[in-house]
Image: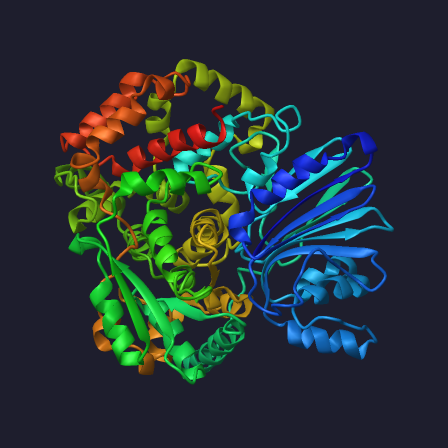
Length: 640
């Protein structure tokens, strides 16, 4: 795991200075504390920071082919590199190292930009083809590894993280807020690709490669499965295929020349991954979990049960996070405003885990692939309600929904029922957007100042197709128009929420500690297998029970108490914090003249959000967290 950056240019006057390139590289040191490297010629410069995982003595980058004409910098892991290496050697290539990086330059010699479809792993990489003066950028299929870029006339700059690009002088990379991106951030809690929070800076989307040559940039999607396709076969065949494919993915991802372990929450997904790891290991796997004082957010007893059953060497860290002590470092690490509060416990467990191992496997994406979130059950129930007579639906969505008392607690069944009934009568897309939205459109409009509303309207007029944040969800729904509502929702999350939120959180929180996180469920073979299962065979969702096929295929690894436990999110008790120990800090930051002076929000609207929450009139915890992280982003990355 590493950090990469670089610049390519057509005009020598556009070349970055040595100090600028050095600053770009140094800002990625946390991603790669073990080594650094630079390549430079008359038209390109590549920078690299290394976290040594495999081929410890031979993995220095930038790395080239034999004659020094093709160079690469690479962040990630290619799990099928041994097979690719044998393929290359059979074609006469000579490889000098034993790791995965050198495979890339030789594959490029044979395949050009077509190499990406041959890779199985997580990666963000750049290849500089010096004879052609061509820069090729690529990102893995699901978006595990980040890559951002800034393109100007005659130049392109790229990096693993935005903070590296911010080493460019301000006249070369203006720190201008993108109004449409801010609007999307407050909608979803993150900035969806391909935008970033800054105008003119973009994320390379997952499953894409980009070719920059002669000042022109071309983006191509290299992995585009037919999400509408289903494979209808006996359930026993699906179960056998899932077991063997996931087991193979886990074994591939256990390859490392450094200590390796796993996050273990005690949920279905992480327990399965750890169980497969233990079967493949000749010693107890090291596992790690974190607990909190609030029982509604503490999973440690389930993690410890899973560890005892599987036989791991388990480490539990129980903390009552002093959030205000951790927030500055956390916010500094996130280059964009980021409102997923589970970044805090992820940061903490990564910090403790790194004291013991350098690589940790995770259960990420099990929920998206196998319908694990509560909202998927709500989607299924809403689809059933949609078939009721109009009068019945109008009664449920109107008087009955309004009659239910409003709960100000973050996790209650009553709150879930009311949200479900309030969505009756809306289209499935509009309803799903409502369920995943942090600030709805009226909430955002009432929050924004008149000046910002004007800026937002101007930006929308220049980009009318991007004006509505709902377009993010709409495009994802369009990827599988023929599938059932539950499968559509899982695919929407796989294409939006997973790369925009969850994988960003895990990458930045772990890399801040010099820890590499790997996710076997994100092996694209597992993804394709899971989403091809017809919902009608009830392998993912059956009668309100999620992950049926996982529980069946891996029954030997799962204690019954874990199989039957309710879903618990990996979060923190924000609602309680903001009504208690953090309410003064919350006010001090959000109502500070510096924050209000930015001119984005109406001061009285911000104060109402705070007061309504503290006085328990409404649960605004996640909205307030979003505003808090936005303000910290300004202070860390924009203010001078």
